[in-house]
Length: 271
Image (cartoon, rainbow, N blue to C red):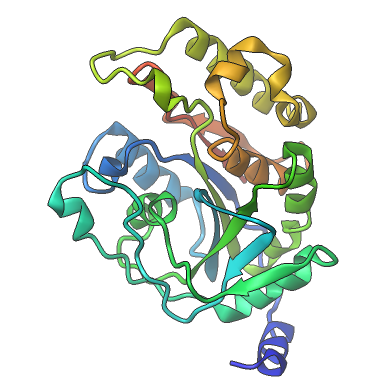
């Protein structure tokens, strides 16, 4: 589809009621094929969401130099992990892409340059959770990458430009983990470490009070430094929060638990 055709198609999009937004703590890839309380949380939250025209997902697992957006008609299912059971590698999530939404995203983020990408697909940060929202894979999905050269504050500012898409029937989904320290992982530990409990509390309080500036400067606190040793799993949260620009929207947390000592499954619904 050429750019002229894409432009004409997006010009025909009509305003819709404002769509909710989500941040989903995706945790282990095994959540894709398990039926556990976290999966039930995903299945329950979608009941509060009108059927979207398409989904724009920001996943922790697609970092690039510069910003990219998938623009293929049929994105592949990427199994970007190792050491898991065969059944997980056999999962396919055959959702269509949306070249028109990709083009609309490029327009929304201007003047920041955004490249149309035809190679990536849907990584497990996207499909492992979206498959529980829409198991029939009947909603088109695109992914927006995380520019590894940007600061958290710059990501937040960029994400604010996506807010108009909520009025076009687009469901914006961030997928990562607010607390994510794989080096401190303990498979035999049911509860979180003390620093992880403190970090979860701090993050939750900032979210509830809509103190998003503090979240963009999380390295000012030692517990958050341990909880967020690298930014990629935290940044999708900022994209979700950035497109909520009013205080009168309902904001709720769910799946608010720590697992294996250092992974936070907390998820956010705003709408």
